[in-house]
Image (cartoon, rainbow, N blue to C red):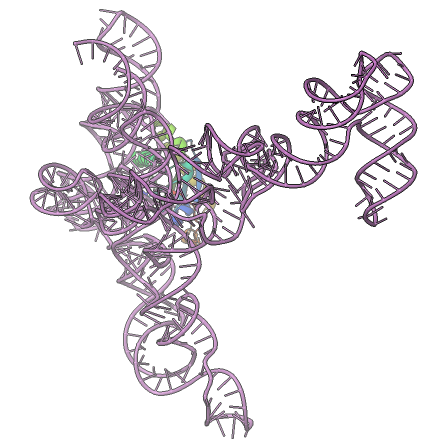
Length: 141
RNA sequence: CCAGUCGGCCGGGCGGCCGCUCCGGGGAUCUCCCCGGGGAGGAAAGUCCGGGCUCCACGGAAAGACGGUGCCGGUCAACGACCGGCGAGGGCGACCUCAGGGAAAGUGCCACAGAAAACAGACCGCUCCGCCGCGGACGUCGGAACUCUCCGAUGUCCGGUCGAAAGACGGAGAUCGCCUUCGGGCGGUUCCGGCGGAGCAAGGGUGAAAAGGUGGGGUAAGAGCCCACCGCGGACCCGGCGACGGGGACGGCAUGGCAAACCCCACCGGGAGCAAGACCGAAUAGGGGCGGCGCGGGCUCGCAAGAGUUCCAGUCUUUUCCGGACCAGUCGCCCGGGUUGGUUGCGCGAGGCGUCCGGCAACGGGCGUCCCAGACGAAUGGCCGCCACGUGGGCGAAAGCCCGCCAUACAGAACCCGGCUUACAGGCCGACUGGCUCA
């Protein structure tokens, strides 16, 4: 799965579905292009801990996602994983299981939204944000 | 063996599976695969100093402001760092800690306590002289003063001492002289108390600190007033590159502490930072530079065009002085800026390792050898097994076995170096000091 890197992209995903677990929060959103390659970004704020702790949280999430990518990814969907300090208390197997569950819930919610809105979203919606910078401190990946 | 001081180092190892990033090679040819190699730290941290690098400013001189540093010598690209030494303080010692000079250039501060905190001073105290000596309250008379008040005599009341009482009273002991009715009386000296005057700073007490210390002489009591020793200042001499050390004629006790209060002295310092800076591309809007021609403001005259003028203001350059630039317009030529994205800056370096030489050392030099992270929503990882070591528990005679510890700290490069500071589980090595025991 490819990475999200632009601030605007993160903000677009933040307006979508949320699914919280003990170790992380998953944000998901639908992209205009239904065939687009799925993407995912990571956010770990300074509240989580110092640089070493933040790196470890992000790297474990990243690895779990890599291992589950095939079962989780669907075209036309963007995601953001927000890491929490509690994720370090979970075993890696639990983390992977939680990830699977969260994605399943997210895809369900997104499907419901698409149905109720009827028409697919247009491109103006995604680029409507003015993109002015409100600096949120944080490390993302 | 115990206790301790200083310095240096490590801060998990091996392996498996699956990944990330960079470089080289190869294959594919539109971004994928294969092979090989590199891939976090001693502090990468805090961002406290010093540099490199980049851009901006930049003509000179002087002055000022601000900031920093401060024993001496050395090292270094440089430093506020490091090394060696000097001085002071602490420790039995190895060793550790601190620090520029000036308080006699000036201003200022010294809480509390204490009499007094700096041109010394005088609470208690010590000494000499003079006067007075039942106490208190309220009156009267006289005198001094003429505002308070002070002195003398005396009355009433209350209290005290002596006495059996009436009454008396200048407190108490000693001593001397005279008188004596032998009870004592009078006078003098001394002691005690009060008041006043003068001298003193030894002692007490306070304090972080009290104006040299101890002893003796001296004195009315005292005092560097005098003397001895110690301390202090110190011309000069000797040693040292120097900080400084040793000696010291002589002086004769002065010059309390704080400069991390202001300050004075010496030296150093332009500003901003890789989000520096450079390059590439599209749309849009019209900005900048250079050169030519040419030009200002004030005042006076004039209706105006314009003319005259021993006038030179204003802005910028930290300030001042000198100097410079700018302060109409027009023509020609040339080139961009902002936003977003990409590329670059971006790692051969005050470089690492080994060895030899010089130096007490910091460090310097020679030779050999190696190429050793380069991300950018930010790679350097995830999971597992075995071992090592630590620790807790269980079993066992022991060897050992089993189980647990989020077991194994602090912490993640962001342009790069040299330092400093701070954080750090556990462990290793070396040198040295003081003890104890054995030979």
